[in-house]
Length: 295
Ligand code: SF4
Ligand code: SF4
Image 1 (spheres, rainbow, N blue to C red):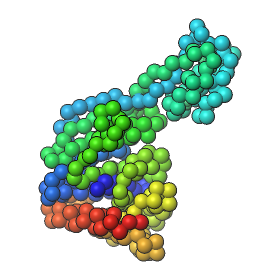
Image 2 (cartoon, protein in one colour):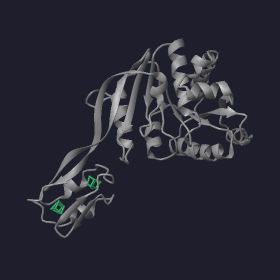
Image 3 (cartoon, rainbow, N blue to C red):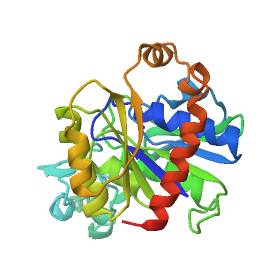
Image 4 (tube, helix red, strand yellow):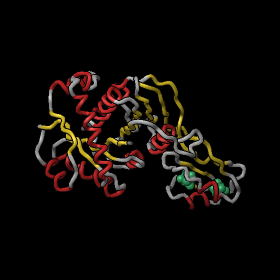
């Protein structure tokens, strides 16, 4: 089963839940694959401390113009849906941060003056942390496009070396999604079997949870369960919402000083408080039930 762990906003404890779920499953049942798809700020490695054995540069193909052949006709700028290329007099300007690598400008250039070059936007790495197969992507500072990195990270983990055919990955798979509801989250959730939303019981938490559930439920039609983190900090709004929407609350983690201290020291919760290991294994069992019962 492939579980995406998401949250409508940052700082809810999403990575805490993802990391501790992975550690508990690895200790209990064996094979776990963990993908840190929060490529703007990957931090699961701080807790899992993997040995990273391989690294690849990733990016996307962007146009490069041969000015010897270019007639400055402007056709490339006309066909670009993303305003990533502009022709001004005898200048062709390319904006890599806007380019989606669709190749339309190359195909439509009447002079064959455009070829594509790789624009490196980040790296993907893989290795292991004990019994956990670990993958993470990291976006280079100043880049704006997280989606291609996440897509290539998932391809590396789940497709053959040509990126053509899916490969079977045994055991439990955890996708640690970026916070929010934008395209990088959708890219992470795509192909998941079930989504676990981590939230806080506060009005802000509820607001962002609603948005995230809309993406997972309404757009992607995925079953959703909720973990309430720091229970006791706020109000009953999340409970009331989940009950009204029929969204199961699968686990509650209380607001406790010892939990916060462990987090701030980079110690996984299940190491600081081993009794939580059983609870995380039970959480996985509930997710399996949710997956079987469906949306
Ligand atoms: S379409 Fe080709 S020839 Fe025309 S401006 Fe663009 S690069 Fe130059
Ligand atoms: S590859 Fe696509 S998005 Fe990029 S400049 Fe060309 S037409 Fe625009």
